[in-house]
Length: 203
Image 1 (cartoon, rainbow, N blue to C red):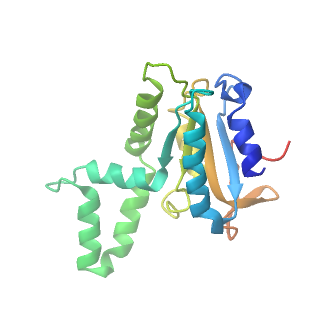
Image 2: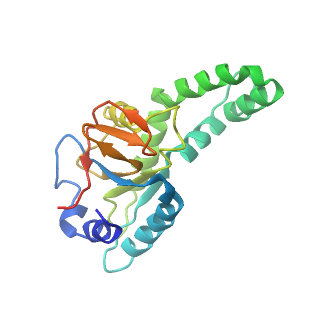
């Protein structure tokens, strides 16, 4: 699917209807070559700007998964430390041999119910705003930056317990491609897990 085709789909009243689609899975994956990462990030902002215009009145929540994870850790206390993120960064900087322990702590927190609840709160706050705008979409990017702490398929599976499938659609911007039944992050890293999501392709 080209950028133009995705733009048409996002502007389609039928696709904007959050209740129009799979009753169980509201995840959609848009694939692109990893080298286009920064072009896609700019394009996401263009999508947002176009959708919020009076012709659509669609307000999109954009979540960079890596940035949200950093924000989550920054706000989380750890023992006497007000920020777990600052603590972990200082711990690794002061002694590089701590890198493995820090990495394991990051991975554990990325898979935690606390982080998933944090993401859920961000989405719930957005779709709960009462005004003239529709809020059918959540754009999720930054998934490449989250590797290896949290893979996309892991996030989608873990988030199912929080997901309100008939209230919004999550559009995942994925820097990679499908290879038969597998996905390859950055076109290199194989992921043999099943994605419970709709792949946005030419129709």
